[in-house]
Length: 135
Ligand SMILES: Nc1ncnc2c1ncn2[C@@H]1O[C@H](COP(=O)(O)OP(=O)(O)OP(=O)(O)O)[C@@H](O)[C@H]1O
Image (cartoon, rainbow, N blue to C red):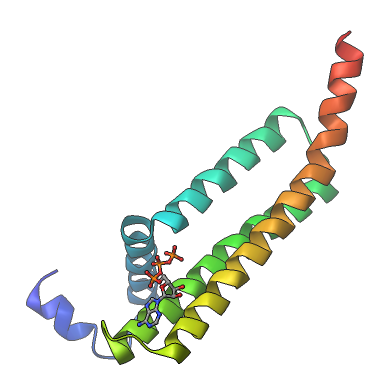
């Protein structure tokens, strides 16, 4: 990033393209710096592939996409709380920061459990049906 770009980023975006570009930088940063984020994206793509292979219906697609969104959003919120906490206390131990980070992590786990349960409800009956028809 050139000096001009860095300087610009301190001011309000002037165009929609600039807003989008900064959002893309955020996405790239999450992908590179947060291993859990890239893991969830890969899992989401894998589930989408499975949905395509098993030809799930529209209703199931909506639930699946909602689950992917829930997990990714909670991971992003988790990262925001982690970074904001680190910005405030740095490397120093703080009881409240521990609680904040643990609650943010719990938020991700809750979303992931929800996604796994929905995934099982959608895919298990289809897979059982496939196995029974295959015999
Ligand atoms: N400054 C701090 N004060 C107290 N506890 C902390 C602090 N920083 C981290 N912790 C504790 O360590 C845990 C891990 O924090 P860290 O910031 O390393 O998250 P992380 O490993 O990046 O998490 P994730 O796996 O979600 O990416 C937190 O959940 C919290 O319990």
